[in-house]
Amino acid sequence: MENGLKTASQAGEGTRAPRAAATLGARPERRIALLRPSQHKGPHAARSREGFLLTLPALVLLVISVVYPILWALNLSVHTFDVINPSRSGQFVGLANYVEILSSSDFRAAFLNTVAFVTATLTAELLIAFPIALLLHSGLRGTPIFRLIFSSPLMVAPVVGGMLWQFMFADQYGAINNVLAVIGVQGPLWLATVWGARAAVLIGNLWLAVPFDVLVLLAGMANLPEELFEAARIDGARGREVFRHIMLPLLRPALLIILVIRLTDAFRIFDLIYILTGGGPGGATKTMSIFTYEEIFTRLHFAQGSAASFIMLGITIILSIFTIRVMRSKEVSA
Image (cartoon, rainbow, N blue to C red; front, side):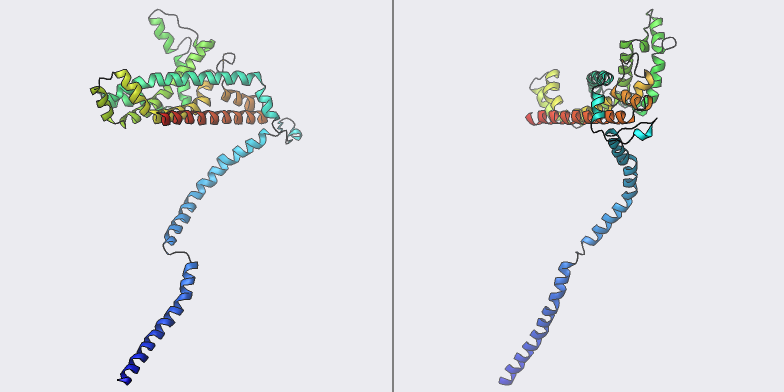
């Protein structure tokens, strides 16, 4: 009996000894394993490195083609730059170029023209785009064909659109004046008068911009819950009340997209005006983009032109942020 107990105890001690040794031997491995990265993070890290390497050429190209020119122009805007006498270039002048641009009467006139154009075109775009979007959303026959027709100007480059409307508004051979002559109306000199040129620029821009507004509004209307409109009809709400109190508040995200994108595009418009009127007559259609172009490539004032471009960029950013905050505050209050 005693021999059996001794044998069992020795066997137990013999089994515990390897276990303890195994435990003591495993502790350093566990410590090393804690210092090593997890095996589960290996594939993820590898994919991250592969993704970074795949996007690296695009990032390098972006830095070379976008970031570096912006930084170079920013540096140029606070220094002197003289094409005729390069020895005068490179002197740090701080905000002197910005002050010179802001104090220029031509810049102030271009700024007022830009503000008037942006206000007029955004207002006219929404007033035209909403009825068209509502009509296409109502489910009329042939709606896909009409959508294709209304979206066709989006496939036209602004330069081509400017040349097209330049032909349309021409004095002697223009299509618009020829149509007016058929009904016995003497066509005006569209591009030679102040308000005629402004009207031509506005009409050409509306032709290019309204289809974008219509498509965005249609996308917003397609996601509206039909139950709200059914409940409003049951309660006896009229069409105007439904539009004002139900549809319009629900379309605020779509309106925010339109306002921000179109505000930026309209504020920096260049190609359509440059092809159609060149900023004339007498600077009546000269916007800030036209002013900046003339300052750099006509007068060869590269430093002042760079300052004007950053002023325009700052104004655009401020207006976009203000628009986003106003729309979001209304959405929260609603």
